[in-house]
Amino acid sequence: MRVLIVEDVRRLADDIAEGLRDQGMAVDVAYDGLEATAKLDVSSYDVVVLDRDLPGLHGDIVCRMITESEKPAMVLMLTAAGTPGDRVAGLSLGADDYLAKPFHFPELILRVRALARRKPRAHPRILRAAGVALDPLRHIVTREGQQIDVSVKEFAVLEALMRAAPAALSAEDLLEQVWDENADPFTRTVQVTIGRLRRKLGEPQVIETLPSLGYRIADRSVQRDTDG
Image (cartoon, rainbow, N blue to C red; front, side, top):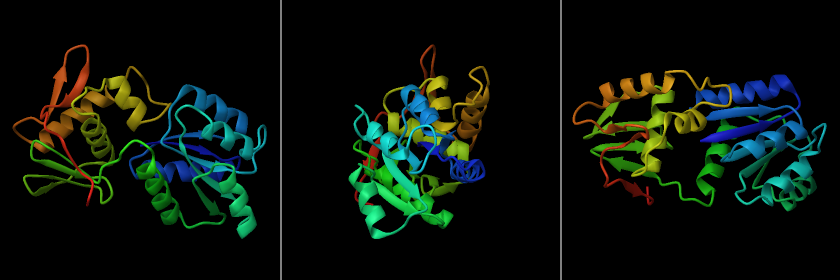
């Protein structure tokens, strides 16, 4: 999941970004409305956490730009004004959810995840392939019923590959989806993470390498349980 934080209070923006990254999300940050639009032109996001009162370009305008784009992200609007009238005004702009400051961070995480699941493309409840089951909500990976201890990034890489199956994802695709805009395109982080995942998942191998293409789930019969 890729998230854009748009917040002009730098410390708050950075704290939100750090907290979401700890949850395995790829997070970019913009500190004003103009910077946000520049990032939105370059990258695709699942969720935008958008402060309403922004310098440069007001959050209301940024929200409209997002909702009117060809592939809109889900918008969680933040504001210091939390009256019912403010909430109605924010939602009328096209925001998908609204959270007043100050807020509890666990609630923010839950709302971001809920918005990502509501995005038009289907986000299945559980992914299964080659005996592996991945539960995005509970952040659990099992193989043949045995739970596997994976890191946050390993989980995110496996989730990205299972969602993309049977298509392959390049190392660049995984850097964009799992890390963020600051990731070094020449790093071997993806290869190292894939290697650790393979060792933890065991035999037969779940992730295969396709020369010049990248990586994909070896099992073509990927299942998606949507009923929980």
